[in-house]
Length: 267
Image 1 (cartoon, rainbow, N blue to C red):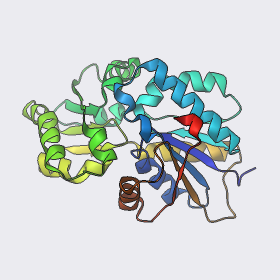
Image 2: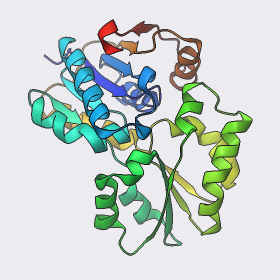
Image 3: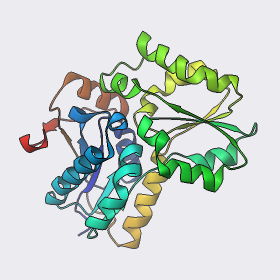
Image 4: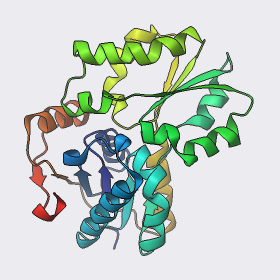
């Protein structure tokens, strides 16, 4: 039925950047968001653990009768999307990936940068995207340990956040990047400090809009677009209600959303 909800999940609050775009472009859709913040970040976890968490979250969302699933996490997509699609064939599963192709299309200097978690930087999926679209382009890849934790804590403008961003960005800027791919859904929370550090010299790309467009195509193809209601958002976290969740969600969604705790079996 078209009025069934859409499931969206991430290792933490980062995927709210995707949730917000879905809510903006598809305002009639009911959304259920899972922040697995008790296990964030996924980027420094092993593949087996990531696949297990993604499987359990998908099972929980299927119990909520979702009609489609959005993996709002680059790391989870790279590690677990294939196995989830193989097991849960009854629903459409939309993943996301770093915007390598658009970056290649936009660069003028022929040098692009990618900021992502360690798992995403090392993933076969990213290597495949670079091989497919960027063989003639200089790609500067940078794993960013610590940034997800800063975002999860709501420390978007802290001295430590700015120190980390400077450490990760300055070598890329010195090598002449003019396009920067944000390969983690947490990083759009940091657009303002990133823009200040790059001084407007680079185009910054993230994937919330193309993922939403793909979701809309999938729903339309399957006659699942909801036309008759005003969409509501339910928010669950494996870390429960917390001040940092409320602040992060309010900042990005521009609204207060009640955070519900996931069942104890998620711990």
